[in-house]
Image 1 (cartoon, rainbow, N blue to C red):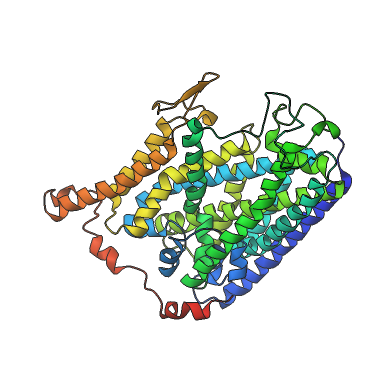
Image 2 (cartoon, rainbow, N blue to C red):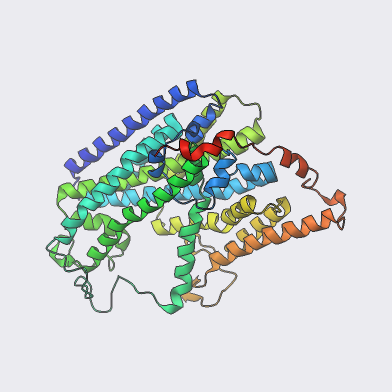
Length: 507
């Protein structure tokens, strides 16, 4: 396929605009650092807690039960409450699945972009991945959260308008029939690729729905926006506003899928067999833009995909860099580190995570598979830990370690075909397809609930044993009950301005 030169020029211009905005935001962050009375490194991580509601809406979702407790205690990262209650050892342990999840997510979105650009622009997937990664890493490296937040405004606005603009052209395409028709003209008999929901598959669908809905609550990128808000009330308002925005922005994707399922691909240059029969159903968005819309509109479409990728990637890069710098380097490795040193640690961490994710993006694994694996680690391991540390005062290090072990072990024993891990535990309804065992029971949710119950039960039993002197004090190897009073005395005070936070919230 020949390179689409006009489309390539348009995408290059878009990338330059994003890069310029990122550099401008990095200069803005330096000005904020000069006037910041607190720690300079927090400007890069949480924007000096001065990100407005409008900017925040474009950069985050969720947080109904987590925004207020996290922001009111003025934490800097998602791992701060763990470090405050459990100490450095468990915090470092929890960083590993969070870091692995971020790297897999970077690989996932870069792989999606590479496939899209190869379809529409005729560029090699590898070149597309390298260029997009370089742009995201550069402006995140320079400006921290300010660059991420301000570029997100341009990126997400572009996604919204360009995808909605594609809808009428797709619906009016000569190759597209009425989307309400049940007969798919592009499919042969018995080869429907729209799928159907069967009762015996309900467990698998429910498991993946909960994974995608709740697993995202354990992403540092979410709390980066919550903690950057000026007050707890502003953080919650931002969450609620963003939830409605996400729903609206998801509608074009559903319509594009419905249009593609009713299109007669034989009337296009793509021809038959259908994308599903060719094994290209995962590229249905770029294929629809390329063959069912005018050329200039398909270029806008690829721009929206590129914007989505960079919007997600820069957040993930800063997420991992923030957790490592704040919770490992600053609190464990070098407690006397200067603010200038911490800023450079953030930058180097951004570079390392970006390069690691970019390397994995060249693999042949499916985008959706990488997405699920990255979410698995957070849903089964981090999410139950986060619930307990924020909402169960009796949770302690012993319960946290047991919950971490139980969740990780159950998830690993359930198998993962994408990584070649065989299933040891066979849940009801399992099936063997082409020699690979597939679980149709909600095994991820079982692992998550088992981890949650383990944290609560073990914490309560251990506390009962030590407090009633049923277990000798000398057996408290982690020093949990010796340091309990000291930890309570070290709680981060809530400033008086929080009482007037609603009046101070900028809408």
